[in-house]
Length: 299
Image (cartoon, rainbow, N blue to C red):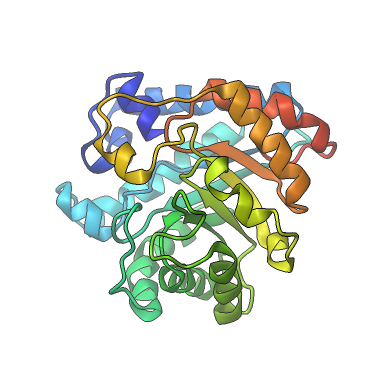
């Protein structure tokens, strides 16, 4: 969402935060347009949809840098879910439409917050998760998580609020987390330290070429991967950080990679895009992968 709004629609989003758009009528209008475009793609392909809130940066550490206190941040998070609940009413009947409260890492989504313990992560994220617990959110989804400790803390905090959780790991060009942990080890440790409490785990913010080798082994832990939101670009995170122009890759090529991943990952059911992707990529993915999806589960 953020790369699309910045590079295609000309928005300025300090700290890559889209949640402040909820504060204006024009911003809310643009967000609705963005979501509706993707909902139509899912409906046309007979698939369900996950409405992911624009709150990746709407937690205390990032909000304070943007000039928002806890009262304002709570309101942004509640307003985000209210907007998605309204949009859900427009979704076709008979297909799943899930409202997800989205959270991001306490630190940078490209660099590991190595000082954060699971206990500290739980305490930090409990605030935003608590706000989601006041709403109609069906699930909490944490994206661009760079360490097992933070993943564990998020899952524990959500469990205490009786909210289902999904955690999505950032991986580098070598298929490992930014702190060097192999993807399989990260998934196994996260489950071991939370009694497998997450609904499923995901990979995001990397091109399929970066992690294909890691998921090609046929290991048991692959069954825990339920979603992929890949980058269209093959650039590393360091290269993406320094880029002044958007690398939006090739939608058809990316869709073909997703089709291959569906053959490798037995429980993969949530498909989307991360940096550099937009409705063109999602439409191509949905079209290429619809034959895997007879039940119309979310894309």
